[in-house]
Image (cartoon, rainbow, N blue to C red; front, side, top):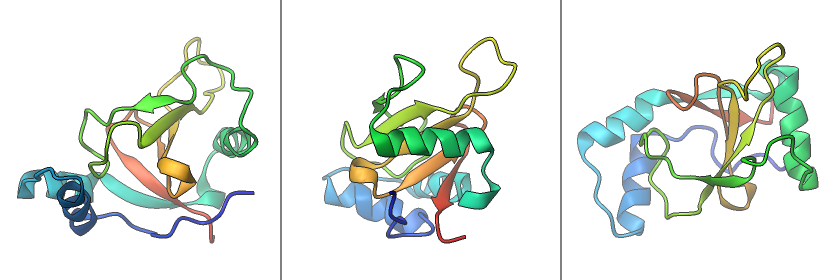
Length: 131
């Protein structure tokens, strides 16, 4: 069973704090981009395939693609800055797609937060498990 994340919204303040705690720096532009690109989504509003992926994550697999569970580097800078290895990505199957498609779940270390993206990392929504 997955536990709700400790935060329901990650914004510019969290991005700044995260960067400072790991000894990095963050510009106002980076913090603003993280705040603008990370929203929230109710668990019940996710597509059913995202529920399937979250269930697989909770069970530890097996996953349909070899890339599932690999480190997500956040090179786009959309999610709050964290140390390498903090984030991992998992495929959300897109019916009818001949490839992995664009939908993913990205988890934070030790399942403290779960993000959903439907547009291949351009935007993310923190999953709210309380609704």
